[in-house]
Length: 339
Image 1 (cartoon, rainbow, N blue to C red):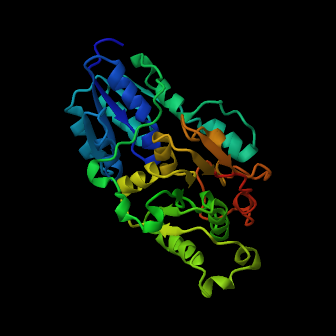
Image 2: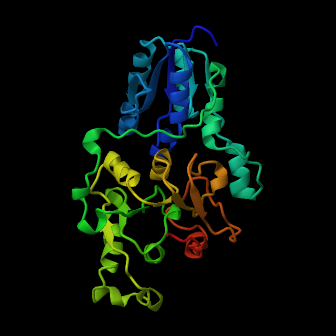
């Protein structure tokens, strides 16, 4: 398309989804001449794009389209790339009345996979589907992967960490938006024991209690001896630092960037780790990599139980296993080796 000078990109949430849109942002900014790139997202996630040098302006959304739409109208955009494709973004496009294209959410294909276990999903990463939404701008995929930019003030210094973790450590992102994406406590302990290196547990304030529980287990106190025999027989040599809730998102990203390896559930920090080209061990429960959101353009190992016929049970997740057994996580095999 010719005479495009100002583009609006729409993606309201969440952390991982926004990070996954960064190749589109970069491609538009670098491949088009004299282009101005704006990005509209929820206020809670605005800082992800405010630090991105390929974004000229971020528009914060606080659940009031009546406030957002007039602000967007005043910018006089030429084109909209809709990378969310929900009711709110459709309303925005209707009210702005501009040329636009939306990415394909594959809702029907996902429904078939979840409910019928019929795989009609394309062998295509979601980043490529995001890029298709910008195809009319004639931008092409580059080879640079994902972007995540940490402001200098949020870079974590070594002396902020315990002495045991200052030389090197493995990052384990224990959080996830839904419980069926997270290992239960006993499996977390087994995983940490298998890693058997200094480990930093990363997560938000909501993960702090679980992180403390794992950290205390490896202190080898009298209390830890009360756990079942399989766990108490383990070496418990891992040195754990529970960072959950102690650092903001950018600081957590800095911890991930400086880790030797990253273990993570299917969550936003998995994609931030991919942006830093980390060697990732990604743990999948009720969701599956075939949905197209596995680590992008970095080395990764998938840890999943492919022998349960009820998986995937959701394209997002639940608070607890619908079947009650949670075998997608309880019987997952930790088949990896770290030098």
